[in-house]
Image 1 (cartoon, rainbow, N blue to C red):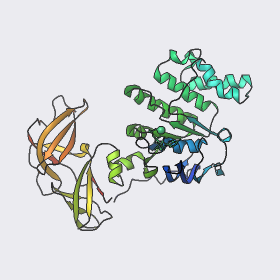
Image 2 (tube, rainbow, N blue to C red):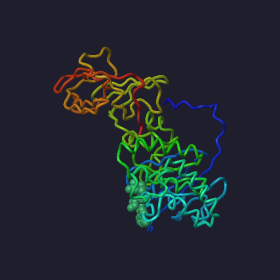
Image 3 (cartoon, protein in one colour):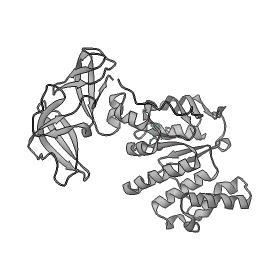
Image 4 (cartoon, rainbow, N blue to C red):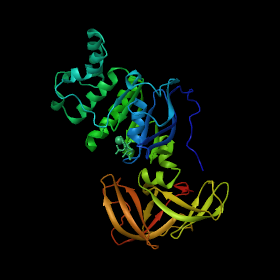
Length: 373
Ligand SMILES: Nc1ncnc2c1ncn2[C@@H]1O[C@H](COP(=O)(O)OP(=O)(O)OP(=O)(O)O)[C@@H](O)[C@H]1O
Ligand SMILES: [Mg+2]
């Protein structure tokens, strides 16, 4: 199978965080984190992505020192910090519900941790001003949290987490409290701020788009362990299993059997169609596999495609309009329903299909991923 292009000109990256075989078992039975190993390089934004209860917060809390690992080690800049208490770690964690102190002003919220550490007053003032400018809230310094919008409150929480200049910033669902529109703008703001400060960041989210937009690498988690770790485009374009393909974005999965197994191509026979995949895979002829095909890689038309590979036919049973694109649900002759997404780049729906029409779906030989497990 093809792999993501790697930039070989990148300088060797310095590893900031290294985790080895980290495990957390609650109450002797609940395996919340299961033998996780990872490295995060300096300046990276690393996302932990997974459904509710898969162990994201537990992993983050162990990094911060609020939870004791059952097994495993944590190294920061080469130093074993596994047994250090939270306040001795150069790490700051912003919690899932980033409670600001409601009775304190924005300024006092940001200064809080610095005061507690006994930093001299003039240095506190200087640091708080810097943070306020960074998150563009200088003119709101004297307001109380309830006098701010959700996005502004979130930026105060971030400024508070960054004020102590941690080496590692841990963000647990940092944008969870924001609505969709605000989330999207804040995601980019947050990335800019993190990059400006040059802090390394581990971010928890259950929102795959958020992970893709913000992170340099993503770990897809399930039941306490990592299913796949990689750059966003690699995880999206080359999921290593059905579970990852299914979790990240929309996907059609065809069940079939490998027929031709060549170094430069394979064919997979499914009840609906025969896939011709334009590269080799790590499988063998006769092997049962899944073929994952993203809806946006499908082209719909009323005309029957030529050739014997990479198309199937069905009836349009649903049309869902999303503004920028439209998703067509096609009931294939086998009974299977697939989704195809067409861009609305003209005013009329460009493929001209409507409910009840017979339609043909086709795709090219590099559009799909063969899943062997
Ligand atoms: N203190 C605890 N005692 C016992 N079990 C716990 C404790 N904290 C978490 N768990 C369990 O460990 C598992 C992982 O929980 P965790 O909070 O890490 O999940 P999460 O991925 O952050 O989920 P969410 O997206 O809902 O925040 C869950 O099954 C949870 O019920
Ligand atoms: Mg959580």
